[in-house]
Image 1 (cartoon, protein in one colour):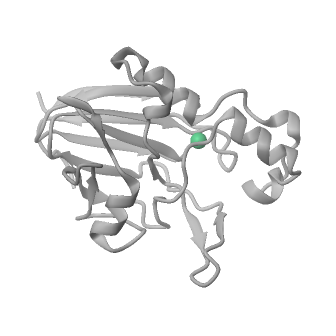
Image 2: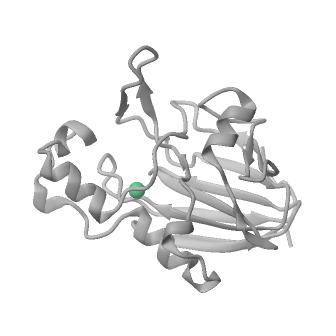
Length: 213
Ligand SMILES: [Zn+2]
């Protein structure tokens, strides 16, 4: 069977799953998806934002690029990316209740998330809590979750000042990123509460062979 696993993940929840080397992971959504990966045989070996950027000499990655681990091994290759409206993010960490409280305390919610937001609208949890819950059965402590590959999180980055800003750009329905696992993995992601779209479900497929694209 080509689709080994499919799962609809509710808005502002997380999901973790095991993937075998050579399998494909298709993540489909219209919201930000905070995606992380671990070596299934050594859960201390994790996805690394910095190596993924430095090894490939760029801060945006897409089709043909790789997710690199702290030990400088290739974890996954992006074999297809249909988010053509913008870039995925490799700068930011994870949203969380604490993060939202800090932005609210600064009075910057609307400026940061690009629409009018009242302090009582902030969610009681975010991607940090979602990934922590999803990975807990594997014994991974919250502080050991790496900063993610933030799918569909289009940021503008000023090349001179480095100032980063969220944007309202999100993929059209049906958009996906297709990864090939280059090692046996534990993967996990959070369907971000994402103020821009108000939180949407995310669908993941694990395919034993490449089906489309
Ligand atoms: Zn989030």
